[in-house]
Image (tube, rainbow, N blue to C red):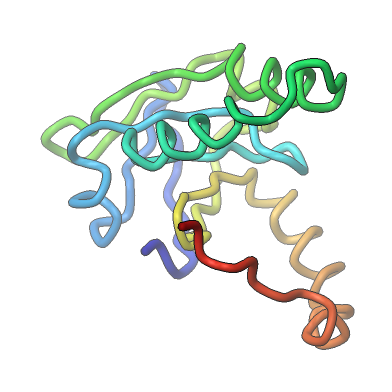
Length: 145
């Protein structure tokens, strides 16, 4: 499980040092994809396969499903952290998320999210105001069988 907020920087080669507490779970490989709200999602490879396996059971005749699958897979990039815990973020994904230098890496339970620091700050400030109101509306789905 990925938790917490971290503030690494991108180097000149587009590499990002993963937080130490995330590295073991991502050491077997990972997939970086476009996320919602112009961030990047980093999935452990096994979790990405499980998620996309569930997507494969959605009707391809539904345009929203097709569009979501296309957006998720088209820019996806597989990687493994190097010995220093760095991953290389492809230029197209850095552009999508507006990543230049200062980043925020957050744990989002089953995945990691990478945000531009200014974008995260604005998003966080906006969402904190309504966070308490969601407690009655957001409910976990039943566990898969």
